[in-house]
Length: 225
Image (tube, rainbow, N blue to C red; front, side, top):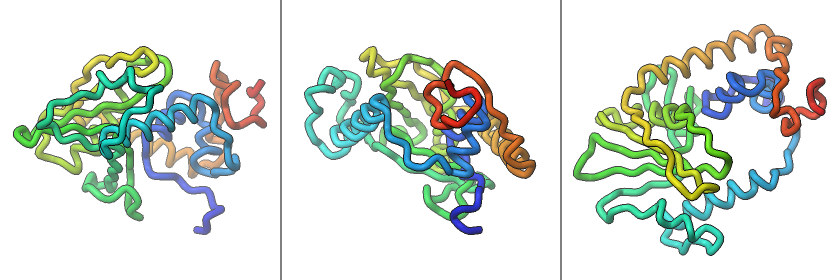
């Protein structure tokens, strides 16, 4: 299969969220055909990238927090005995065995914004995700990443996580992510639905009109204003 041939990417949160909640047609063009060309980042996307890079440098490389983000420092103060890792890339195979993010056999992958562990409690981990947009307290992304983490660290019995809502300068609700079985099953079901639609072809990814249409990169769509 050459690079121009449509193919299904590895499962990831953005792919599944776009297919389930945003638009199947956008899923086809963004993730399968990949025929939208290079998209200019929006102001919001550029800011989000800047924030993630700055927090990575602050938390992992001991660089000072930029003045524009310094008021968020209180959200990222952890005891000295906590082990902090940022931008953690994880992958799993279809049989749920762990693999590298870019391995050929990767079935699902994700990047954890912030992973916190306690050496004295090897069965415990925290996930924190930086969010620069409006507060929408849906733990699905955290659950997706907990599935990947549990595959790499099966000794974990307690995984908790939350979003840091930076526009509000506050942490979100704490979610218990320890039971990963249900989320893994959801991931499998969604990936199978995408696979079935892929086998049926382009028309099995119909457009879905919503309030997000004005920001969709598929400007040729009948629903784009």
